[in-house]
View 1: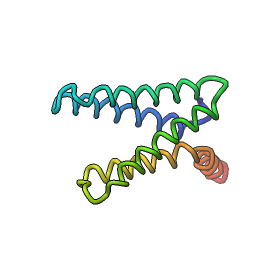
View 2: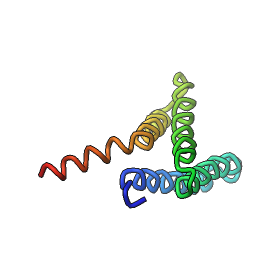
View 3: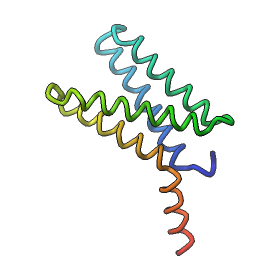
Length: 116
């Protein structure tokens, strides 16, 4: 994973935001939404665990699909969204894009370092 700094950064950011949201929603609403949030966190952890195993491509697919699906489902109910929900939908789509195309971004960074 040392060869994939963009992927590692994106995963760490995702986990930090997800845990922060779970705690914030739990403190504001209570345990009403906790099972659904734990299910989502579980899916992410399974995908991340696969990234560290021989099934790297499956893990990459699961984590990317999770972000794209959550982003599309969030933005799909666009008529009733508030500003923060639109932000989270866009965040998930951008993270899905970043995670899936991390090779391309990392290659561009390496090319720039070699040129300098």
